[in-house]
Amino acid sequence: MLEITRGNGATTFCSGFFIGRHTVITAGHCVYRANQGGWNRSVRVIPAKNASAEPFGSQTVGTAALRSTVGYVVNNDARYDFGAIILPNDNLGIRTGTFGYAIRNDATLLGSTINTAGYPGDKAYGTMWYNAGRVNAVNSLTLSYDADTFGGQSGSGVWRIENGNRYIVAIHAYGVGAPCTGNNNCGARVTQSVFNLFTAWRQ
Image (cartoon, rainbow, N blue to C red; front, side, top):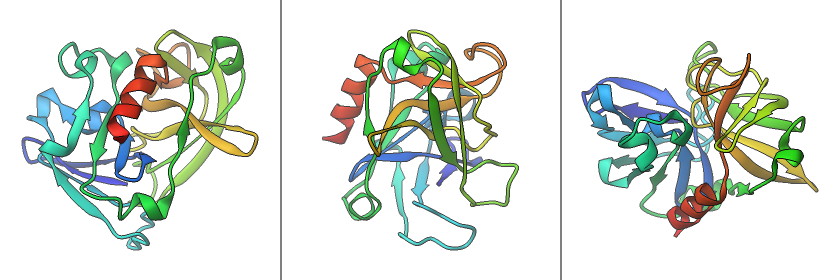
């Protein structure tokens, strides 16, 4: 779970996932919101939070630790709505483990089963919920799927299970409506450029 203080002082929460021992991926609007003061003042990262329980502890970072894309921050393009939080050390990620991430072609993704888990705002605060669904539409920059989500789950990883391993193929960011296709939820797809950014942010 990510507990957020916006640039204007407002507080909110999002979801995220580790791709490296000190790198958490989330939605771009979970690190930057133009109408709420721009970059967040702070983010507290709390892996596997369950109500009051924080089994791995937490780390809090400031604005300098946040990353996103030019497409989202400068151009406000929802198709590029993802970002990262760079933690000061490996203390959390070395204990939680990390997700793989993968580029998959349209034929592989369309109709396949995806999974997501995060912190929906319609459930008890700080409780993680899981859902699975099917990819119903594939675009060059987004995946649309029917897995159930709610506000607060922005930044959740969308993963496929392949040979017993979990590979992120999208970053959840939106419910029904643009940029999603049809009556689906959606997120930014892992393309070659997304893959390259993830790898750079892991360094």
